Image 1 (spheres, rainbow, N blue to C red):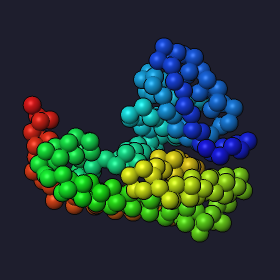
Image 2 (cartoon, rainbow, N blue to C red):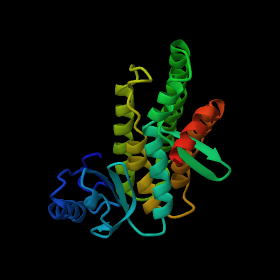
Image 3 (cartoon, rainbow, N blue to C red):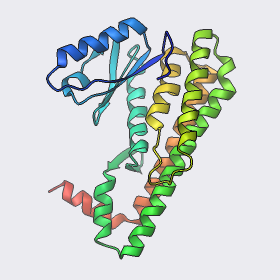
Length: 251
């Protein structure tokens, strides 16, 4: 996260499988020192990741070595859903929309199964299409977020929060620009960082209705919706592979 005296959110890496109490004390001390509205934690310590709270911040989500804690309780479910989607987009996870339910499929397993069912040239073409479509949807989401911040930042009444967003937005833009020249296969996707830096402070600190909160939420949700549509169409085009994976799940 941007290095300010009063960051709105902290991005913390804390590893040590046998140091749960020490790590919990360190993270709590950081929260007490900086008073963030949210914490994004990366750790190999399961007990730490499932801590219920850090200095008043309550856990909203934990998955795959990452966890998020936020102020208040009323937004935790929504924050958890946003974090799940951001993680899926960053990891290029296959997401299938079935009515109002989302199903997640491990992409590596899908392509291993697909590889055995297609010719090498076909497989390469399909994989490149997938990387392009999912990458484009994710990158467009981050771009839409930074544009929404630029457009609506003046609507934030609190100067401290405006200053934070100016710096955070510049950081996200710089991270994106640094990797523009890379291929879709190797270019890192920054949806988790963008969500944590640009969406969570608005969700936890601004009340409804607020034009800035609405703008950044819509930018992320619309981008996530496009990503889900892309992967759903992709899955529907290769339904036999998914059926095979579902059968193996039930074994």
